[in-house]
Picture (cartoon, rainbow, N blue to C red):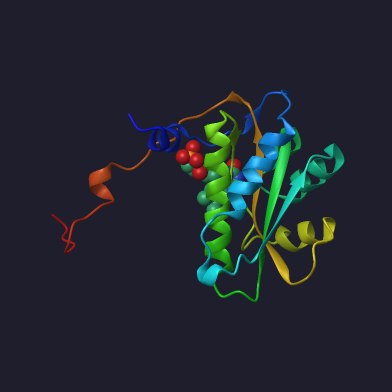
Length: 168
Ligand SMILES: Cc1cc2nc3c(=O)[nH]c(=O)nc-3n(C[C@H](O)[C@H](O)[C@H](O)COP(=O)(O)O)c2cc1C
């Protein structure tokens, strides 16, 4: 039994949240885990927003197409990447996953909501007064789970290969 892999395997996207408050020190620890993610050339090209204001959460939810549940989250993180960094997308995705797993380790659920490539990315940047040099990569609504759905996952044999790939 390995605590790290158990946390990874127990994670599922959560879109229904309880009203239970998340303590500030946990939020800070999650941000610390984001800050420590790997980045190309150690550029750390990011900004992490922590949104708790109910009206702001509602506005963000309203701007998204598949993130209406953001309004009910205790906290919504907004992860922005600095566009001038060649690998800002990969870097910010690594930070987002660090945050998801840190939250899971506290028994707190979350759901990655797309930011990058979505038309609403710019509206959310403007709403939060984030400088133009940054673009939204992901939104991460967070809270204790009220409900979880378990999606199907591909069989490990269908998605792995050893040495040279072959169809068989
Ligand atoms: C880049 C990315 C964007 C996503 N965007 C959304 C989204 O906009 N709305 C949503 O409800 N889920 C979103 N998800 C969550 C996926 O739907 C979810 O990870 C997938 O269904 C697998 O479920 P699981 O996370 O429980 O393993 C996104 C996930 C990723 C990685």
